[in-house]
View (cartoon, rainbow, N blue to C red):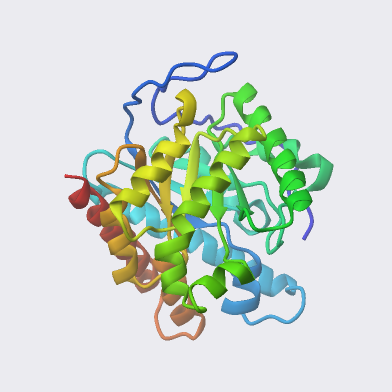
Length: 331
């Protein structure tokens, strides 16, 4: 899919809130007061092509246009939800350039919405740039204050691959810090074969017993390699003490990192539980939930079982539900 870069949008982006920043060297941790950030994530590319559209090859122009139209539909669903959001809820929209240029420009121009955009190539086992050496030009084009990087890491993975990945992300981290941008690092911690053996292949046990500690170790490894995001996007947790450990790791040695919960296309009941666990914990400041908001609606829309208005309402209702669940749990 070719680049859409032609000219920079003329609209300006308004920052969500002032926040303390780390000066040169290590600054002291400060309490940051800001609206909670609730991101509707729509930056999936490979999974939309392969699973939602069931494509076995590159999309045709018509299929690409359909994907782009559905990304815009989801953004409009978010906007439909904005007037009814509780006080203190800051909406965000995470979308890719490849299919989401239109909603990206609209979100960048709307001071009610925080725009986030991915830097990574979609569907890779190890991090790589979506646009190679030209990544900075693409990352800066839309004026997003929240560049986002997705990585998979686990202390049991290949050390050289881990270090090489961390070095790439550290380059982005340094760039974002110099540019005054709030980098989001989405950290997935998949089980190794050894991890799976320890829990007899039970994925729920892995999530509950092993993943929290491995996540802390991965965060510390990345920090030690120069990865210093403003926000860590973290997989859901079953126990409050685990959320507290991870929030503490994000703020290790005076850092000012915060955490948000990612969705992982989990059922609503599971997501609600993850949100209730994280919301009361200091250092957690919201969520970034994607497919659980819009997958079913788009699937029904593509099958012509519902119209666009109904699909938008489903997106808005799902998103509002998760926001209210988080805020109710936060108290």
